[in-house]
Length: 274
Image (cartoon, rainbow, N blue to C red; front, side, top):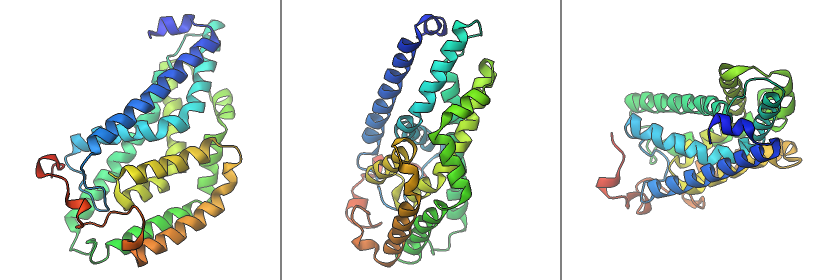
């Protein structure tokens, strides 16, 4: 749909059209992610592969995981943008806001890739699953649980759950303004969810199971009524789970053990690059 066509739609139809696109985008992203991850090593310590391959799958994963939870903000932006256009302001396509938002998550993915490459370069074997790997993974999960209790987490979560104030008081005109708003909302979203993404990296960034679990937690925290009061129970659950991963990783349901048969099923032709 062109920007001109979207600007001519009635407000309700415009929002419905955006909702359909978001739903379809999330569905397609999940389908592509599932197809590309078939047969991959989905345990801790999975190779990130070449940068180009990694960025492609990372952006697809973020679309699958984050589009459902960011939908309320995107729909509200689309509604306000349409109303402002009806009153004479320049119409700003919603995709520009979404692009700014995902640019921040792409930057987060690049940072994670850099940390992975740095850790790989200086690893003396301590990260191996038969040595310190389970303790490091467990510590990461427990650390994400502790972050749930911090003021920064609560600040970012309130912003993500209540976009009204952000849109009405922080509206920036034009396409450049839409990009800035998308970036600002993306920063708050990363501030809210980076710890949950660390859990995904610790347990297996290519695991569809843990990807779905993390996505469900993110959606619940941001969208479901009253879920903002679950920070303490979630923190305690993550801390307990982190201790479990460190103490008895082979007994954690759904956690693929590096070097085990499931982790070794992927044929060499399907493995990610170095």
